[in-house]
Length: 210
Image 1 (tube, helix red, strand yellow):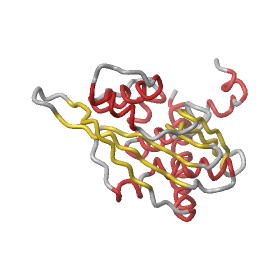
Image 2: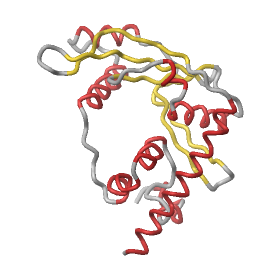
Image 3: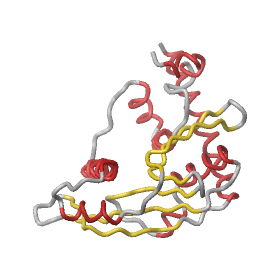
Image 4: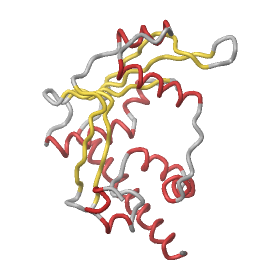
């Protein structure tokens, strides 16, 4: 049992984790049954080709050494720099009722700039502006620093299918600046509360059912 779990034993009985992350919100909104399978019963989600490619990108950006993949090495060289990578934020919303947690791909604590790295799927400006994940990260920064992020960027490493039918990096980066206001963030808190309440209810039902 982790130190974190020992400090918040009551949360263990309400949610399988003593915090709420974007991945939990997204999966619960998609399907409470799939949420239960993953977070209550430990069934791993199937890793898609796009997910594996994204993991390669994240690991390469962390090490920043040549990989032998020309397109990936080009991405490493030109991906925007942020002083902090994999920046963890833990905050409380509504006092201690909703504990939130997130890991920002890139962050500048001095200027409150957020950078999120993506690969795989096609991204458009409209999709970036409506991204629940980016609104979640803006909420985390707002709660922690009492200010909205000065900039929220999504950096998309474009991909394509090669002649063998495998997904690969193109070597190009498309960057989008998200148009997310404080009103957008405050509206997003409704989704946070709804997901947290739903997850607690789901866990309590599972406990009642034995």
